Amino acid sequence: RICYVNGQFVSESNANISIFDRGFLFADSVYEVNLVLHKALIDSQGHLTRLAYSLNEVGIPMPMPQDELMAIQRAIIEKNQLVHGAIYLQVTRGQDADRDFLPSKTIQPNVVIIPQPKNLLENPLADLGIRVMAFPEIRWAKRNIKSTGLLGAVLAKQAAVDNGFDDAWFIEAGLVTEGSANNAFIIKGNRLITKAPNAQILNGITRRAILTMATTHGLTLEERDFSLDEAKSADEAFVTSATMLVIPVIQIDETIIGDGKPGALTKQMRQIYLDTGLNHQLP
Ligand code: PLP
Image 1 (cartoon, rainbow, N blue to C red):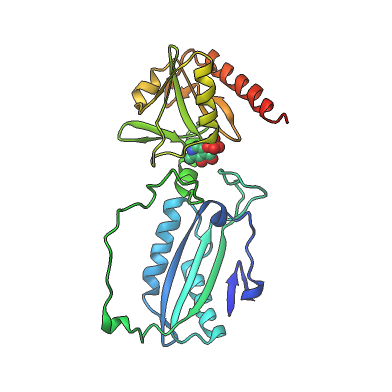
Image 2 (tube, rainbow, N blue to C red):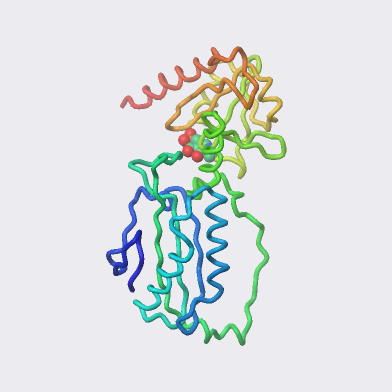
């Protein structure tokens, strides 16, 4: 097959995308599948319009005008002598030098177009019909799996930064779930409060280590839901993750937490985590 990758028509064995591509790392990409019958693109205007819509929704620039994309798809049909089948088109936000939730300002979209020859006209199921099983709507609802489907987190973090913040906390029905890529904690008096792990959050490894340490250092543990309002009136707040360790939260929306400086207990948590973490490395 001849495929299209970023301005080049190449054989499929030479059609490569970087491991730093954000489509691969974060599912930070959108796509279309266009039906081809008798060498003609069917409903192609509808697919290109929806592509433009999807790109706009996630803030990826349209990589080229629609008529150019149309021309490339037609060239793919010609070069592959594609009679019946589909054309798969994917646009990713592009790639940077390293994996980072926030893309650089100069990032350029990656565009991939793949022909899929298939005799879609002679489908036996058209005569037989299909059987379907009812299934819970789980899409984007299994956050306990450390999935690379991170587009939601990417959009939240970008919105936060665009509005002058450092990160986002997700709110669901008025309750704090977690950060874009970290777990959320608040402290009230000597009570350490964080959401109990369920499918609504990723059960962080750092989170669990902090909970174990906190109880041995005199904090009372409350693993329960807490609201955004409760968080805003907390004495201290912080987030945890493998790469942030423990990072204080000093402001939520326009509300200053405590005196607007990293809290004493939070700083202690970070220090204890460092100390015990380093101890874990000892043989
Ligand atoms: N929550 C989310 C959504 C995350 O992506 C992460 C880490 O990437 C965490 C929490 C923290 O988990 P851990 O402490 O295992 O790094």
